[in-house]
Length: 149
Image (tube, rainbow, N blue to C red; front, side, top):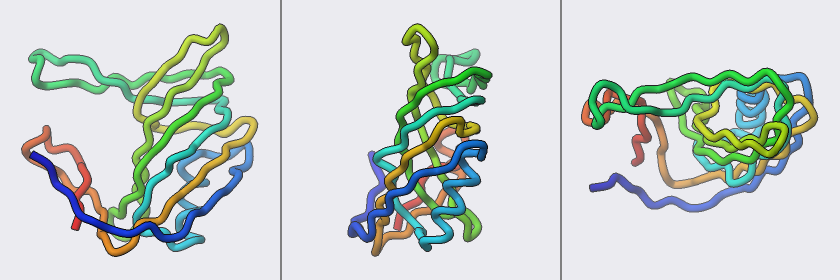
């Protein structure tokens, strides 16, 4: 039914990421600098110039969703959240966000990439006494899902 483990909250890191950089490169540097092995991102907000998201649609069967990659090359404001895990000893960040286009049209999905245009503000909360990794799960389309100990 579910997989879970109990941990404790550690440090809280708050940062402003600089414009002109890829969101994942900036977040990875932040996590490595502070030695965050596991955690969550309750606040991720700012502006992108270029954005790639993955959304889902049904495939040939309703029980087999397919990813659809969406790319936006325009200024967008966004708010998101995510999970920090480890894959092969490096941070693995899984973020979902909602972004607003001109005219307040919103888009939502799994973040693939984004170039910071104005700023990005982020809060990272460290998790202690728990190991969070990603491993392929054959029961769920062989996706790299959370493995928690």
